[in-house]
Amino acid sequence: MARAGRPAAAAALRTGRRPGARPGDRVLPRRLAPEHPFPAAASDAVAAFAFVYEHAAEFGIDPARLAVGGDSSGGNLAAVVAHAAARGELPRPAFSLLLTPATDALGTSESHRQFGSGFRLDRDEWAWYRDQYVRDPARYRDPRASVLYDDSLDGLPPTFVATCGFDLLRDEGEAYAARLAAAGVPVVHRRHEGQLHGFANRVGIDPDARAAMVHAAGVLRAALALSRGPRE
Image (cartoon, rainbow, N blue to C red; front, top):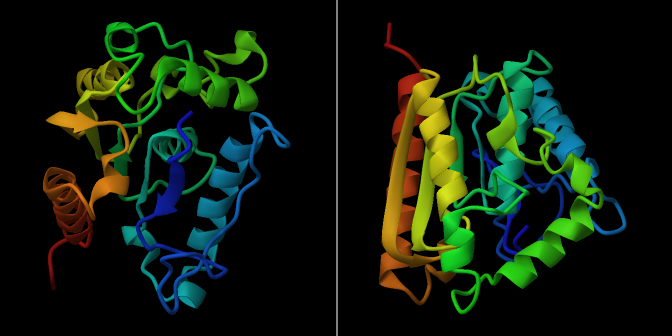
């Protein structure tokens, strides 16, 4: 799982001050590996969404327009929340925004072979992060670690998946988007051909990465506007 990944609700909820946080933003902390291995982060992400939903009035947000999103391992956790909601464990998010999501802990795709070295996130680095979190290889296919292997996709929210052309996680993100589409889940996929993994962290130095983030923000804005429904 990539170091850059982190879960985020569309409401940008924060309970403490962090670098880059704005006045009024809040951070809901989660337990980190290796001190807290799988499924701690997945459980915390689900609990955080449930907490925010239940306390929406205190946060000044509309719970019917609460989305989940994240990049890399954060995309994984956002998807885990959406899948938990689809199983009826918590209210369903209005939308999922997944940027270069980690969806398959096995790491056997062709893009892992093609881009395993020299493309920012190397396979050895990825495997180290994965192994700090999911210590038992027998659990790699657990849907809370690899949403790609969830047997049931019914009830998932509309989803946006962004992948990068030169990213070892490219194929698993695209395989996940294809599975959603085949299951009838409203999904939009966008491959940013010239980008490496973690473009969300390069918006200040890479105009194309910034354009990719502006596009994702536009998708999210439109999705939440549509979730509001027709005006009376």
